[in-house]
Image 1 (tube, rainbow, N blue to C red):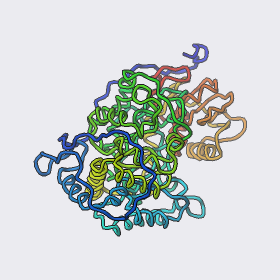
Image 2 (image 1 turned 180 degrees about the horizontal axis):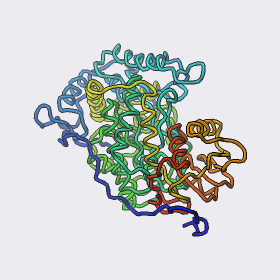
Image 3 (image 1 turned 120 degrees about the horizontal axis):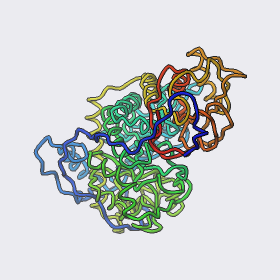
Image 4 (image 1 turned 120 degrees about the vertical axis):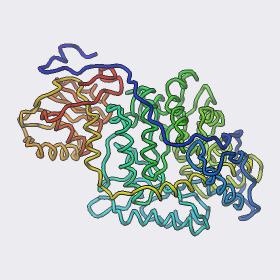
Length: 570
């Protein structure tokens, strides 16, 4: 704890509290079990290219057909009719078609022509859109018309291949720093904001709003939410992307986020099993090693995934982490024991890999070699293999040499087709939104999470002036705009406000505001410290409302950090 002298101030002090006990927000899906979990032993794909571009249809999936009555739902959302239709569709596919149906490709630059061609050549399920793929206007904003044309092109390429279900058109749009699509789309706060608000209903409505704008642009899947349990400042990857360091709170919030996303017609991708918030390395750069025991993992990292499985989420993402207690030295994305562990939590839906071009797996299995290995281990959908053509050839070769059972490939394809048939139904029932439509909702989310760690809980802390220290040019611009709206003059000689970003750089000031994970406040020592969790326009509006005394700060610290207990707040 910080000292009493440090916390001395006039006005009410922030209170601390311990764990929260909220009612579990669950999905409104009927839990009717239909398919047995996927699995299979690990096997190395052959490097031999396929000798034919056609062949007999692959065998039926190894899973049992649904026995529930017509119209019933599988435990992960789609109906038994969706499943039956998918079984029929997969039965008519060649090995080459099946090998593509379980892959989501990627491309470089803003011209999607090569990706559309790859979808047609390889029968890919679809494409992800990364930041460098987003078409921009002359002033650097997302061009909604051009973006919609890109997603439509992928959909048309899938249709041209004879498929009647939608393309997987996915994106990483979590809110906070992980948002591939910027303005004019609504800018949303980090997930940790919702941990501070501890309100599943708020998260659900926010995720419906966020994803309805994606749906309006033609997306069908969003790789969110992250239900990783962060371990604090020693977590280099997740940080404010996590709701909390409390597994119970994360387990309550994850299903609420999924419910909101599904209401918009967008498929979620709950990530990153077996948990990325408790490893000291970034899988984008190297293979993280998880040294915790199985008991520790079950109690901490896996609790939110278990809750998600029980709630009936349709998609979970398998990360690239070597779990010593399961399969030492092997990335979880190509490890059968890791897929078995996820299935043992009760999950029966689609397992998508994290991007297969990430260093954690690409360094061990370069050039598409990981694709067949991941399928053999238990994956259903392969995200971003480094070389889609090589990965496709490797899958076909693995079928031919027996290292990938044809039943396993058909099982994976059946799950993916079932999922996408259901997505079409969800989209038909959902309303889309225009880019930027939800600014007030984003501001309300930030206002619900803003947390005073030390300093007065009420009253005007600026006295009409502010002098900004630190922050990016965009941060300063947004703070200044929010201040002007509230009659606060920004300039030299005012109350000093340090804007502390993710790097933790800061300076002595009257007030310090953390714009990302709150442990960045370790770098400063101010009489007033506030966790805003984000640097969106809505977050700055919420900060200025608190600093001018126009609003309270209702949030509670969702992590133990910066010398404060979890639960600290007014």
